[in-house]
Amino acid sequence: MKKFLLTVIIFLGAVLIGMQASGWRSFDTGTQYNPPYHNADEGQPDDKPDGEGRPEPSGMPILGESAYLTERQVQNMTEWRKAAVELAKQHPDQVFYCGPADRKMVGLTFDDGPDAIITPEVLDVLRDYDVKASFFFKGNRVKKYRSVVKRALDEGHLVLSHAYSHQELDKMSAYEISREIEAAEDALWEVTGQRPAMLRPPFGAVNGDVIKESAQHSHKLILWSIDTLDWSHKDRYHIARNVLDNVRNGDIILMHSDEDKGETVAALPLIIEGLQKAGYRMVTLDQMLGLEAYKKQN
Ligand SMILES: [Zn+2]
Image (cartoon, rainbow, N blue to C red):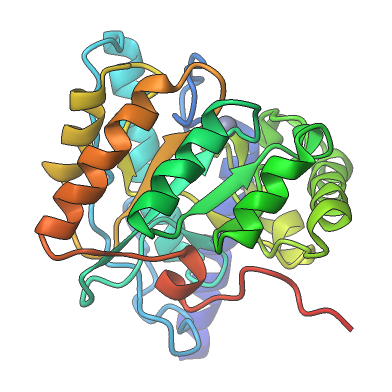
């Protein structure tokens, strides 16, 4: 048993070092990928630490397509997706990309707001359908659009962190990562009176330092299991199909609410009506994952 544990520890250490060395690119907006971190296939620990009553990640693949990606982008996206699934398995208490597979619920999530137009329009649609969602706001825009941020919170949505300046955290020092997380948290706290406990790393860029620093700041890392690719294939029907053709129990669905996402707003009623028709409940991430959305305050 001791020998086994030692093997697990050495394996996880090697994974962390590997990730730091190679970086880990994602797909939440249209940047070119670096070769993403490739996970070792062998030596998977069998008895992962249990998630304190939380369900294990199902290991389901990450889905969603765009007709406007280059071959290289598709290749990098595919590799990133595999790595993301593995990372969630290896860090079941810190990295999440989907919820439990045994409940017919999904989470709608919106990155890159707040802004003056699209985020309020998204909020209008959600209000009309009485659906709650989770927003990952850019810290450096929170004070500029404070009424939009407050509205999101007041209407029952989660107001969470997308770091401060929307940079690739895996390219930063541990100190810089820490500052990105803290600055976004402080901006959200100043506007909402809540400190977020969930972080969506910009571009899904994660490495060992990002995992360590986010954990140290009591932020869970939240990725996604359906990518609408609404920044790439900006067509309401395509965006809706990416969701409705792929949806599974526990999906965390990635969309965006910054300035040029009019088609995302137009897709939203199609998505909500389609999900409701198929019997899915749309819930916020704290409900979905059994985690606190905000830090406890004294
Ligand atoms: Zn983003």
